[in-house]
Image 1 (cartoon, helix red, strand yellow):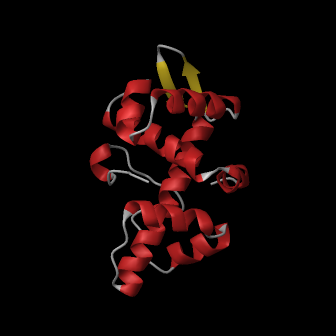
Image 2: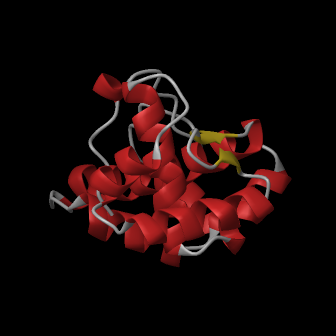
Length: 148
């Protein structure tokens, strides 16, 4: 993963990451574009929230958004979403394998955002991760339902 992707992950808000991951997951469920309605239902947010966020993510060149057509991740947006999901997975795996504790997706997601890039990599290196530094899921079946 490039430094540029890490820099973007570090600059994202948890909300922005949540929307990117939602687009990625819905893309893995069905082919893009993802409709606003799909994101509204999946993330349990208002339509106005979806529109505002995807417009903001489009300005950052993380998604391509066309009103009434839907949203798709750019290549860069997909790399960032996969890095964000990997952070959550690394935290969950660390708690499960290293501490024998179960951690919800949403809590692991929040912790993943609080830790530095170096801390997350150290956690990932200490666990038996299915992926290395980014989510490698190619279908929704390979990925836990994401609900941050």
